Image (spheres, rainbow over the protein chains, first blue to last red):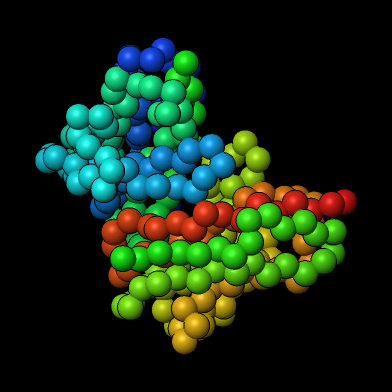
Amino acid sequence: SAVISQKPSRDICQRGTSLTIQCQVDSQVTMMFWYRQQPGQSLTLIATANQGSEATYESGFVIDKFPISRPNLTFSTLTVSNMSPEDSSIYLCSGTGQGTAEQYFGPGTRLTVT
Amino acid sequence: AQSVSQHNHHVILSEAASLELGCNYSYGGTVNLFWYVQYPGQHLQLLLKYFSGDPLVKGIKGFEAEFIKSKFSFNLRKPSVQWSDTAEYFCAVRGGSQGNLIFGKGTKLSVKP
């Protein structure tokens, strides 16, 4: 199994600023994903983080708003740029274990934009 | 496109009652199916999964789910719930063995002691 940690666990940010969320996995994972869970909603995939190349974004999400990096197999960052109150959400990092189809989730980063 | 439907938004049960949470998906090919649980204030945890083989899968904490291919369903069951089962339950599907999960909207379970 893989253990996924995220930093920060929560933050309160002002409108117009940016926040970078870090995701660290304790073992190599083949695929890494970033999800958003808005209040009272289910999880929505933002993008697939690709090692050493640009992330693959889902419909409705763009790189300028949510730039993602994945410099190696165990680390990724998601930046929420030019934040507005509508970006208030929980952001979750996820990874698929090597040699297994299981998908693991981090504890999430609870973001509040004022 | 893949999608997942969870029929119940909020289920309220008394302790020792039996539980069944519905989940239907739409996808024409081979699927991996999952149930995750999110206890209050905690992160997602995997309850059980189905990849192939026996369509009745058993997970942690006495939960089980049955994959019925003809009905595109993967319902979650537990014969006797406990107060500690109060949580939100998410059904998820993935087409094939790789790629991202598509989640249902979740079912909130409240168990009265």
